[in-house]
Length: 433
Image (tube, rainbow, N blue to C red; front, side, top):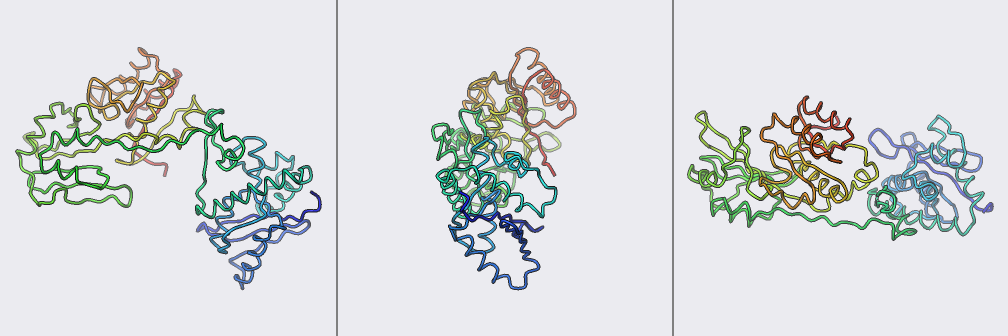
């Protein structure tokens, strides 16, 4: 393969995550093209397109998926031909998904230079070490696979297609590499299935409100019923989270309608929360000073089959690591840990500490969505820490699942559980900012 002409290319980002410069390294020269300083940008882009589309020039990249997306956004190249992705080469040899520059250089026994200004130079040294020992047939195979990766990156605008290796604890792997070489080892994709059980809820609501819910085509999140106000519904997620009148007729909620619902809900706790028997829906009461019911907030409970597929590696490849899911109210934390409990319970002794019965439902019989996981109810939120310790002492779980850890004593209890060898799967309100 010594008669081949190849260059190493590296793309650098600006503070606004746009392409700011391109490094191109030939056998003896490193060129750096700074878009912020170029006077005639289009002239350079024209030449760049010709290089990228010329399959007689091998273009070597560290992370072709990342750079192809940037180059297409800047130069509108459409496709890149004649590429060699060192991510692909090293992952194929070592199993390391998305190896960094140090890993790539170490694989080819090259000392890493500290300055980012010489990344393309180092990449060419790594490529030289690989091409020098690679058979032409193998090199052509890697180039073909790299070109497919570049095309996918451009088509998906940078979204990576990943898979999990079912023979290696669901370790994260590149889909294009595994689908070409070890298709039988690929974990089967799990389609996402949404289950809401609205019929359980509509049976306890006034007829007109029930009919409006069943006709609703939006993804319901909450229903708000306040005396003297028209019924309102919240739907959507993120920026699409919207409020709108639930019923076609603008008829205010009256006391009798709330009482109608309350007749079916007799288990309001001290936190004014209750659940619909046999379902995942949660109802919270608003009361006046005399403790009379004047409003209800109905949180629509749902479970989603297949929602944990994207974190299969976290669940299976690191069995001794606990996981904390962070997010705001209604972000899907509880929905996700329900599915986690069900998946892990297939092979582990999983116990759920269910403070508000939101994970397993408000019934002595746990909801089917948690599978083989067992469940301990908590009579009062202040006793959650005690039930966590009781769970470990009396039932020796492999995994404990807890919804909403938020107080210091619960954190201390969680630390005690981990120190006793229990894996914790928990959620909390918050973020990493």
